[in-house]
Length: 55
Image (cartoon, rainbow, N blue to C red):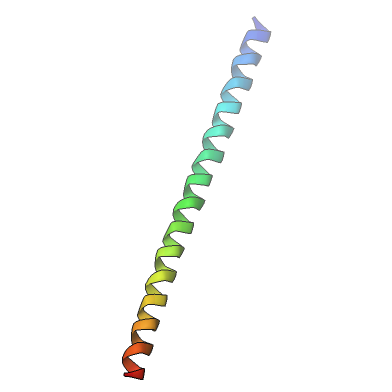
């Protein structure tokens, strides 16, 4: 009985750890996408400003 309770507790702990690691990886991925979009917007803005300034 104790071993079964311990096993279920370990499984629950592993599932929780897996959830948190996957959750954090999704968060990191979203942050990377956000930074990329922001970076490209700045690059496009700067390039358009430079082209307008050169013209």
